[in-house]
Image 1 (cartoon, rainbow, N blue to C red):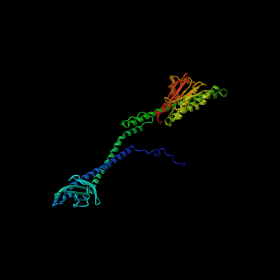
Image 2: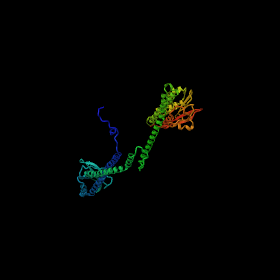
Image 3: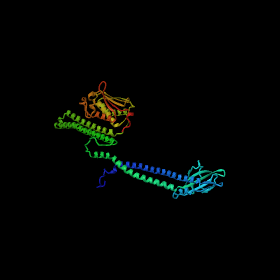
Image 4: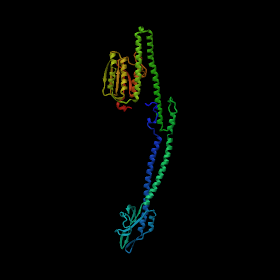
Amino acid sequence: MTVGSSPPDWSSSTLAAPAWSLRRRLIGQLLLVFAGLAVLLYFSVQAVAGRAADATQDNILGASAIAIAEQVRAVEGAITVDLPYAALEMLGLAGEDRVFYRVASGRGALITGYPDLPDSALPGREDTPLFFTGRYRGDTVRVASVRRSILTGGVRETVFITVAQTREAHGALTVSIALSAAGVGGGFLALAGLLAWIAISRALKPVQEIERAIAARASDDFSPLETAAPREILPLVDAINAFVERLRLTLDTSQQFIAEAAHRIRTPLAALKAQAEVSLKAGPERTSEESLRRMLRAADETSQLTTQLLTQAMVAFRAERAERQRLSLASLARTAARDLEVAAEMRGIDFRMDLTEDAEIEGDEIALLEAIRNLLDNAIKYGPPDDYIEISVRADPAPEVSVADHGPGVPRKDRDKVLERFRRGAVSEDTLGSGLGLSIVRQVMRAHRGRVRLEDNSPQGLCARLVFPPLRKQGKAR
């Protein structure tokens, strides 16, 4: 490390993911929706404008073709037409557009006009225009075709009248209308963005009030949050209140645990110190065996209590954070029995096992082993010497492991009490213990959504059962 270098700034925003704004995200999503609607409006107006321009142009073209058809005459056996220039002038009003026409007989003989003007299919009805779009002299043209029958020389002759017009004015009109729609859409988009910003800001105001209410609270204020929140925000308020309540209970439990632990540890330490002072004052030659035994007992109590306190802290930690895995109860029971085999042999106690191999659960292996070890440790302590302990595992109707001894047992009135921290039954006062073993077992079972059952063993003793929910109902662990 370079001398004089400044310490790292752990509060720097580079250590955390950058915060994003809900308001900006909502505005962005709404603007995307509005922009999509504006684009849809543009193309819709463009299509409507195109159809309107087509209809206008077709009406003029059709009227011009019919006007020309009405001027077709048969004179001395020949077909003539007197073009009504007023009809063509109507088409000429469309700016730069050019107009073409052709009048021809049914046999294809040109009467007047442009001979290469494209033909359409045969109009279905006389004096009813047929419209189509084609190419003529490099330009796109809109064409109207009309047929008329006249009598000449005693023969009825069919005459085709075709009028065409380029589409520059049509395109310009369509673009003009579409651009007007685009301008309206852009204005709508800007106005909608402004109104959305105002509306979202007002909608998020309750969230800001909740933020200010939480920020203004003292660190020891765990009262429920009360605010006039809308219906959609109430679940958030309820979740905050539930979390604050859980936090309060956790802190209360931790403080109570620390106070009780300090008191429990202080008592054997004080006894150990007092006994050591008495022995020191008496001198080596007057130190009795009983004093040494008392000192050893106080040291054992302190050691066991400290170990159990650390175990309970470990179990509480793993209950919230440990990953669950599929485990065999029979394998757990064997491992726990093997761990306490030496302690059992010192009292002449054997383990008799009746294990079902298909009993499986999902859980934390370390915590479950600790729970089963505590049951076996209690059975070894309180069971008679030169006896046996029964360890059973079964799968139906629910996964279960049980430990049965032949000791004094636990009276029914004390069975709920001994599952609490630092609480022991009346028959166990003369046996070294911390009062934490069964409370650890219950804590482990609660974390695994199971239960502890204390029952009488036949003909004498206690049977402790750990009952787990079936694996198919337990689901995936957190």
